[in-house]
Image (tube, rainbow, N blue to C red):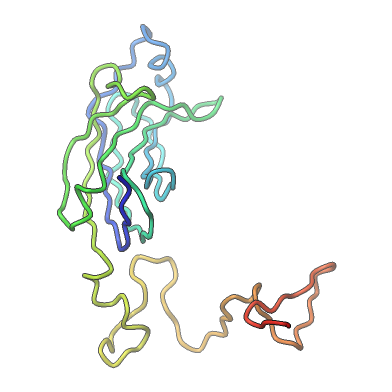
Length: 199
């Protein structure tokens, strides 16, 4: 049953214990010589991807993701794929029900990797993942706002590329609502005013 995952998810993908690469099976022949990567999905929404590693038997990523969530989901899915000259090939997926993390309990475990029919892949391979979810209700920064008196040292949203700065001239929703005197230098572009109603 889907649940609303609203908050911050810390997810670490460590490694896959073993992937068999014998050529007795069609899928496993494709793994040999391929670069492997893993993804984090909230049901169908891809929210994280590891780098590619060239270790077909025991890929190790040890990558951590901080994911801001507002998703209605039933499972967290870890997908393992190989990437070769013809494109990405699915190796398998590991599933963790959202109920196991939604209350803030940490999960650190080896999860069985399944094929597209839901059966364990050859060799019963597993992926090691660690998860910790923090609900917006438990994050004291969430609703305080920027430079709030209650939070004078608030540095902006953590784990982002660009830190919060003062004095910049950022205009939010610039493409949705522009001033009346705005002159576009783009041919055939007609600016809109999203926040005004015309009767």
